[in-house]
Length: 151
Image 1 (cartoon, rainbow, N blue to C red):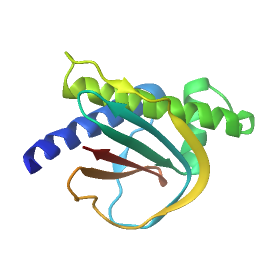
Image 2 (cartoon, helix red, strand yellow):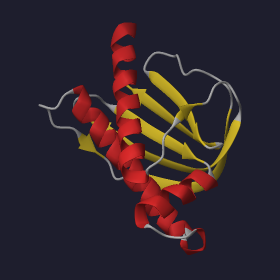
Image 3 (cartoon, rainbow, N blue to C red):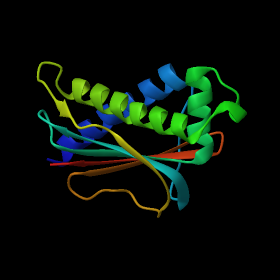
């Protein structure tokens, strides 16, 4: 089963990289073992191929960069409402892409994504518990993290 989760983790990484590179023109690099505080949290649930929840934690800076790059705006034009919409769409695209990579022949059902502005300190850790994946990245010092809980 551990081998299966390794394969699932690689498919999730591919989906994350594809969305960030194609939609936001941001190229993620691994971020190892540091405690990082994130200001935004977006999540989405899924059922079907796999069952679980996908969550992304964003710094204010990376959330702003994502809106700027996808909507061609300047920083002063970016509002919390635009960040909220952008981050919900981000988790929706990543989760949909991920589930399609897992099995493109079966239907997956996604919940409506949610987003909140809340400071979350993510302590160092690997997320190596059964059914849990924790991935940490950064772009030019702007952190982002992803958690998946899969049943």
